[in-house]
Length: 318
Image (cartoon, rainbow, N blue to C red; front, side, top):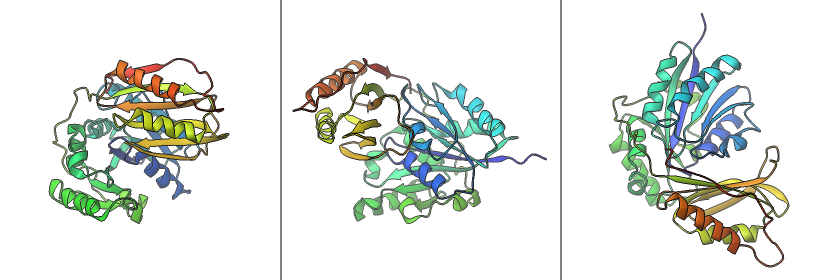
């Protein structure tokens, strides 16, 4: 009799640390062969590349959230990973704009082949719980999650961590509450939890999520240019991420709200650098104009930004 492949569903808001968590999960379990399905809101994938050095079997779903626009691609993607590759565990990482409730239901369609063992929703402790939960899709995910995992507790203040704990306990008391930075959200804990979903009857948010994504290919940049760009795009750009050669070294770029980090990229160097910008306050054309002007204005001194192809913009797909 064929054993069902366990599935771990990971969701959370934009920039909460989903990809970082999945990467840590894989790194900490070298004896386990993972298959990963990554959902990107925009047409250009970044998260898949960030995971590729650690996970050989990745399927990317782009151009919309798997809870609605690209929902029809989810079941084939999971089936491909489970049947084509000899994996022990499948991890599905939703986009930061997705409602994971209907995704969990879709997984149940593959019950003879896979089994949803853990539905984990990440709470970003650097963001106040009442601010994070203004998004209806995210509230649905939190309400239906079997596990709520707190991220970034190492850089968040004590009041916000306590606020998240109190919120989780009252909002979804049946969910198991874990702290990622305290190494509590281990693979063994997830697979033995038996809390895939605490509330399978939560309504789904299948309307358009209101996010807009613009991608841009770029040449070599200096750290000064990149930080200038981060300052110029301002707070209306909720998320910026990408892979760019910075001061001669390929780097992973992560910007959540106004906090920018630049770290070495460990994967295979891409043909060209690329950045993705996501906003919920701007229309597509406004975001495109802001990115274009901010990139041009970030060219300083003797470090010109190399010419690059034009924009590839997406919007209204989630």
